[in-house]
Amino acid sequence: MPSTVGESLVKHKNLAQRYAKALLSLTEDASKSTKVAEELLALRELLESNEEFKTVFTVPGFEHNQRHQTVKLVLEKLGVETLTKNFVLLLLDKKRAQLFQSIQETFQQLLNEKRKQLHIRVVSAKELSEDYLKQLEEHFHKKTQQDIIMHKEIDPALIGGVKVWVGNTVYDGSVENRLAQLKENLVQQLA
Image (cartoon, rainbow, N blue to C red; front, side):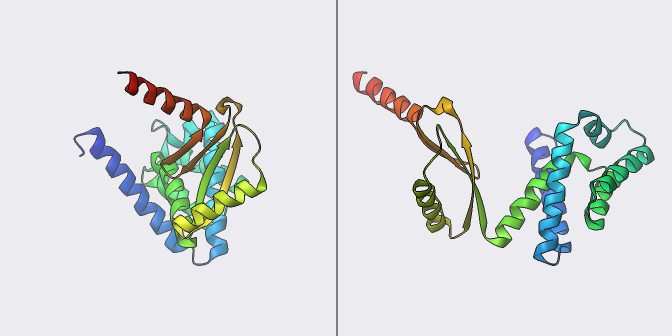
């Protein structure tokens, strides 16, 4: 049994990765893996938006058969593939429902790697021009040798500039960040 929170998180991540890899290996063609990824995302969104279902899915206090039947019914109503349904029910049987979000994220990440795709998040104060977005895409494609899938967001609080998230790395070209750097440089020069 893990003795620290860090060890517990590592174990959680390792288990999620094993389950995600196993599921990916069962999706023999690209269309099936895409369908499973979409279904896992739909289930995750349902869990995030419906507290009652989230409670049934994750809280240990429910009787196993009742939980199993309720989740099975929801999955059937969602129209998920047999593979996805059986996988989710297996997680319940193995008491691994708490891993679902990590498994879904890891599955998507592994699928992206397999397809040589990189999802990046671009946040700007206003709509960016197509030319600028194309330059960003080309820059990250050259840097990573992967196809770039861009998710754009508008955040007026940025004032100006752009922030780009690539995995856990943030490239901050916002006006706010530039002003903070300028302030820091001035403080250091005056000290």
